[in-house]
Length: 117
Image 1 (spheres, rainbow, N blue to C red):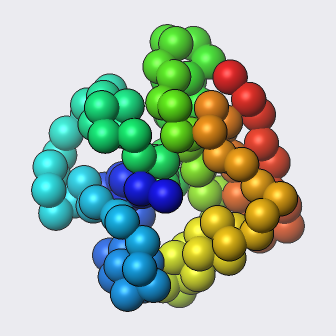
Image 2: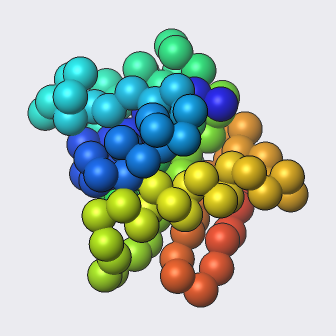
């Protein structure tokens, strides 16, 4: 699974995922300050799942018809250690009951919700 960490996704979590063997590209390192639309275009072109803390991605999907094939994972965490999002993503991906393709996945400390598109 190829991942695309939005600029707001912590670099400690990116490093944790890299060390865990994941193919992850960090916007903050490769393309800092690009728009959400440009992040979507990279995800679509490179078949990557977006990791973000930005709720605007739901609007891009459901109102503006962006359809990243590999999905978007939106984390709604208020307080967390900088490597915690990476641990959450790693566990979620390893859990066979979740499929991320063509889905907006919303993660809170209490739940994981998915909505297809």
